Image 1: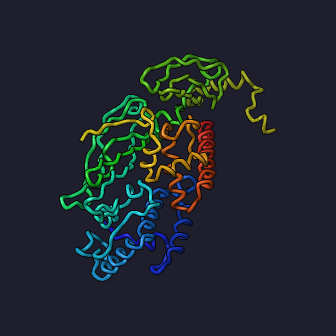
Image 2: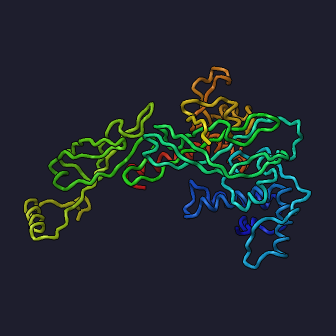
Length: 324
Length: 100
């Protein structure tokens, strides 16, 4: 595990004030926001700066991190390798979750972050609360990527999560756990699956929070998802496009259906198979995008056929609209 | 461990549940409805009868992040979320026409 330099992640000096950190974070968050960023590693960068901001904008976490950074600078290995914080490194510091922090923040943070703050109340602050304190556990968030087939037909999946648990002394600690998750048939991308009682543990006998899993669907070799609709490129021959044809296509539900290609079809033409997209209260459609595939002119017969076609349509000029 | 699984669409969230899911107070959710970040099917019913689905949870989480990361007030967050939705709609449209 590498030691993470949160100051260089945000591009600020060690003595940067809160305002400098806020400004640096906002500038980078705009640069790497997934909706606008063209950078290939935008997601990873966004996680990195979120993590750095989380530590450096919290006085207690920052002071403890600085102390640890000093310790590593004095005795750390030359390659920056980092195993675990030394015993007692955080003595005197308490980590509390600020009121403005959302529940999903720490789910994506690094192992380095977890090794420092994860077992010291950084994900809920339970260790600092008295024994009489009663509070329902916080809800937790994660994402699950499934195949289109699993989304359509339902499935059972195992999910490995790093989660918080309360030990015998009442202190929170991180543990790895495995959950068997039932993916209901018909689930759609960006829907949330709720797992009751699988969030953070409650305090004083109160119930645990819930776990929310955001459904993501892995790219499919045939279908592209747009909302409830699916898109598939359907190659057709020039003859099928020109004269019309009946072709068989696979649907995501597993059935094969006959589709009529109209006479004079063009590349890019869209055919709709009603309600053959994602199922649901309002089922999506399956759109077929026609793509004309040219037979290769790799035999005398094929070359002769192309020449014959050119002779049969001497006035055909696909560049007429260009004035050429 | 086998967990009880529910898709939000089949058991929508109450104001309280949505607030908990985003680490906020109930009042904050009511503000989201007021600034039209969230839309409820039955605005004339009392908030105890309101229900929220996955898209609402996604927008509430996004609003929470905008508020925290950029200090955006909820009116500004509402505008940004609407612009994001429009951006995604246009990108999807471009994708559907093979222009993405």
